[in-house]
Amino acid sequence: MDSPSPRSPSAISRRGLLHMAGSAALGLALGRRAIAAEAIQSAKAFRFVHLTDIHVQPERRAEEGLRACLASIHALKPRPDIIITTGDLVMDALAASEERANKLFDLYNRICRDSDIPIRNCIGNHEVFGWQSKGRIPSDHADYGKKMSRDRLGLENTTYSFDHQGWHFCMVDDILPNEGEGYHGGISDEDMEWLDRDLAAAGDRPKAICAHIPILSVAVFRGLEARDKNTLEIQRRRVCRNPGPILELLKKHRVNLVLTGHLHQNERLELDGTTYIGEGAVSGAWWKGAHLGNPEGFGIIDVKADGAFEHRYHEYGWKAEKA
Image 1 (cartoon, rainbow, N blue to C red):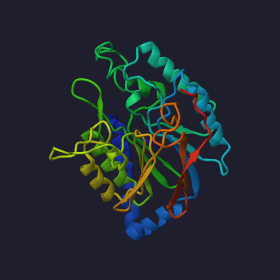
Image 2: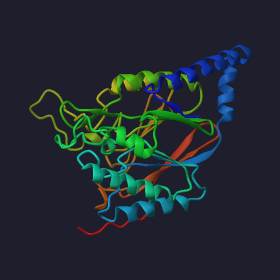
Image 3: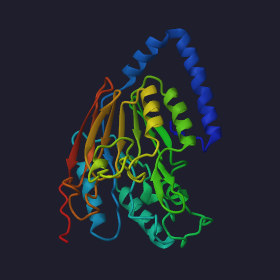
């Protein structure tokens, strides 16, 4: 069953009450060790794929590219149970007109309807309508900000969770408004509080966090040099601005896996028992070829019955137009 973020208080309170009642009864009967054993036994082997930074658009043969990507996914053996996306699905709603933004979401939804594998979406910065429009889209517009992406992607909230085959997945919105215009990375206080409760309710089940902007990254250091400065500066558009509290939360709840995109580069980090995977982009360098040696592709994650997993990056053979 899906669990929305606290922007839907009634749903959270019902879920919280049911969880507390169920946990108390089960805990009294079996004890914590037995609960953990049951959670592990309930996990089953399955496969899912991770797509990020699709940037679908009418230009650069992007529709053809996304269709080729989905065809490659459907041809995998074994077939994935679900497709998870972590944002930048369209290119792009930040500065687009209302007409253009709606056409982009129309295009994305039309292509995805052809998939008979369920798709779970997470938003990225390019799904936020009007935040970089330089005033052309007023803040009181009916679809301003994340309202358009919620409606067009069929999301009750942009942060939510669901369970699959014994795993608990949290789809996290880590796009925050910048002062004035634009965006930066980070998880809001409201969503941090919800995430704390939601992960606690998941108990000993294996857990995955899926978000757009990295919490941890090594690739973000490319090209940085302090020289005459006392501090090394990393833009808040590149990584989450509040990694410390997020890392503590993930450690507290023993999160197994974090999947992100945004940088269009492949990297894998391990910290405090959590694996952080930054995935290369479906679009490569925005449908212009490989980005910093990272070709167009997606992640394949094979989950084992004991909650362990294996990940590999799969190139689907896309050939971009020559510049």
